[in-house]
Image 1: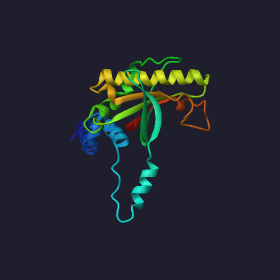
Image 2: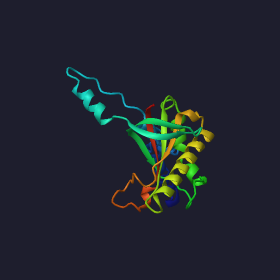
Image 3: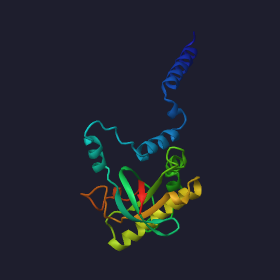
Image 4: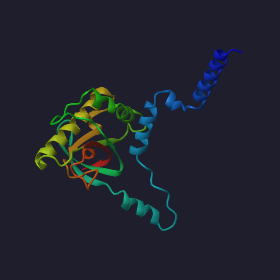
Length: 201
């Protein structure tokens, strides 16, 4: 056997081994895995069964008590929603400076979220899209900008995916809920958060 043929057989064996070892999600590009991970983080959790005195259920209820948020519907109507912060996920969506416009990179980053929200697992539920900024700029400016960015994300999701507009609410928190509290100017605080809505008032 010549060295070149032996080398070719070795390369083919390595390629075959890698292909067999690779998980299906990796071979498919990983997009389904991304949407599945989002579903796991946002889908409601069924409370555990309770035996006897109900202690487990009481503890679970306290830990997951919904919080009230003064939000806005996509029809621009005020709406108080009850959100379950235990079912939430942060997304790093890039916006240009002083802008709420979604560019191609930002839209691509929302693909898995759109697929997850449009799927049957999350289809029955509503969600709050919350915008967050870092502490650069005034509080009023940051509130306005974060609200505009949240609205832009929600509008894109309903335009690009089969998601009913009435399932999405928006709010801007400005810099009031930093991801990195010790560093309010840190860019990691600029994000969009999606939270399960447990009810409305």
